[in-house]
Length: 159
Image 1 (cartoon, helix red, strand yellow):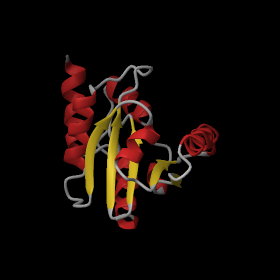
Image 2: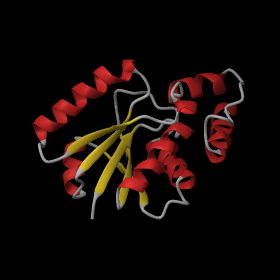
Image 3: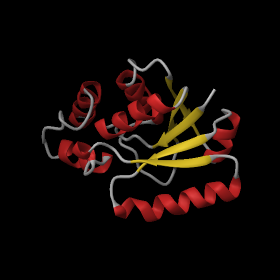
Image 4: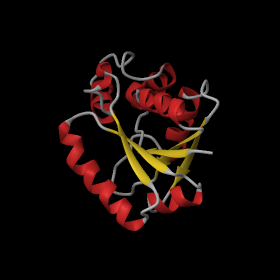
């Protein structure tokens, strides 16, 4: 069984994330969307909330599962018997950082490959950070996130 890990903060889960997960599901037998715990980032949503958002957005994909993880990604990938890690690349500006991560992961665990996927052109500009900024300022994010995430953003930002 070919297994890939799709890791990220997913704060919040966007249509770009959904697009990459859907395309990975066509290439792999099992896709694990892994919601990361990153103490260096100030998340709007808790790790459990981000997991719930991803689960709801991905419910129509039978070979995709969502879980959380903490610690080194390669250790998590190895524990899941994954052959690869998929990372979304939006623009050249993403490449340098993602390239460094991929090389470090290869150094730590040579058997696990990193695959870069570009989202559809409609989502190339999309980031969780921009979505949060637009939502915080009262803008309409319905074109950028699944409906369940839009509702979660509205609830969270009314507090």
